[in-house]
Image (tube, rainbow, N blue to C red; front, side):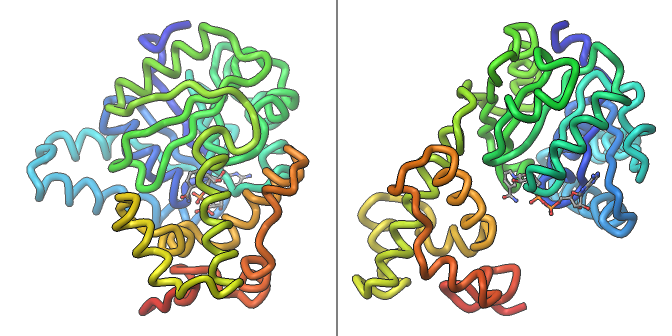
Length: 288
Ligand code: NAD
């Protein structure tokens, strides 16, 4: 199957990433069923997409007709079976928990048409492991978008052990059609992005713990010295310290190398509920 035959899509999980993925698919002309078990999340996702499209109209990036057509292509539903029933491509963006994702993949496999590609937006969970929950491992692939999805151009396309070239090419072409820059990566923990980013963030946290420098100064070093647009501790607060810890646990466990050992200070802050921007406090304070 090539991506020219991908027309109907479903996005399962309508949180931060799911609503962004639905936004870019609908804007590029694909029909999108947006699924979430939580009705409040579904309502919030629909209004977030509408207001983000409005912002693009205000900035003259798209016109009002593009916005209206994109909104017409969106179909929110709380029922996974109904949402994926006629999809050519399903993008899963539910919570980053292995058990939850494995259950969702088995469910998608039961309800999506036989020809459908099942993609996961996971940041760290094995695509090969998700594929093993299905009868179609050749049609399972990773599509790792970045937050905020309408703005960030990168998509890591992750080939599982049994992903076919046809599946890869269909998804690669679709990503380009969304205006993204796909990069092909193999299915190893953290792919490329988090394999490199998370150890850097972890090392910055060790620097805080050992008193090498103040958090603000650590970020200044990386911004001014390395030309990073955002320091690692500000980025960690933005991502969520709990999410960083979860990904480090996956790297540490699955690669079995102590160089990925999560910093005890990171663990302590997560235990204390200092998760970054979303709780108003991480390495830096935030106004709610
Ligand atoms: P989120 O918590 O904002 O959204 C997850 C949504 O999934 C929730 O709304 C929840 O109600 C829904 N959900 C849970 N179980 C479900 C099910 N069985 N069926 C349907 N919906 C279900 O999470 P997020 O930040 O959008 O992350 C989603 C995925 O994207 C994760 O795998 C995460 O690792 C990945 N990711 C996140 C980011 C990021 O910066 N937030 C970046 C790249 C990738």
